Amino acid sequence: MSFSKPPWDLLVLIRDIIAFGRGVGRAVQYQARDTSQEASAIGPGKTSTTLLKLAASSAFKMPAVGKAAASKHKFVVDYSRPAGDGVFDGAAFEKYLHDRIKIEGKTGQLGENIKIARDGDTKLTVSSSVPLSKRYLKYLTKKFLKKNSLRDWIRVVASSKDTYQLRFYNIQSNVDEEDEE
Image 1 (tube, one colour):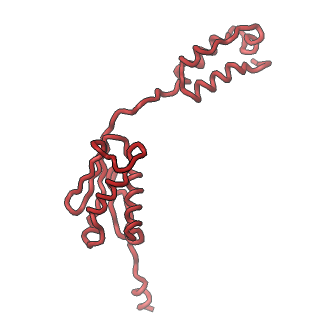
Image 2: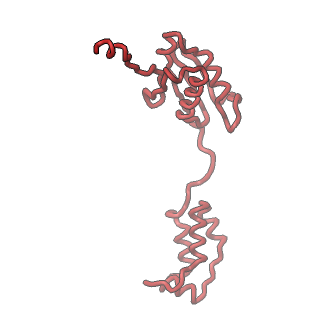
Image 3: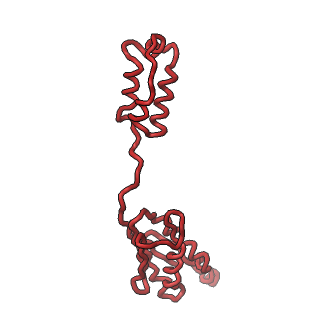
């Protein structure tokens, strides 16, 4: 089957359906012309209306755009190792997160959406009813460490799916190696 001339109206229609995700509603707005030239370009026995139906089928539909259901996120930052050595201040970290976490582009407006709680002197729990990524929490933690000049000695490691742990870098001393020589 060879086409003498591509049906540009239909190609534009299909592009719009895929790109904008308007589905059938957008396809109905287009009124394709059934001319003999267009019908011959499409192929024998097929009309532009048939192609409109194919283009608007479920294979080309984009997912519906809307707000996602409120999901619960709970992340834990375990800072027991640095706090045990007296290097890390959990209260300052909690205040930093409270001041810096952005909701809809605005800082300091956590409200009922995000709860930050300290569990003793070892863990900080961030519970959220709005989408909050674990990666964003890691970013803010690293920023806090940099601000307090701790980034050179402490790293942020994911110990489980919803937990970060602050650990000291393993630095081998070169003094022992030099003494042996």
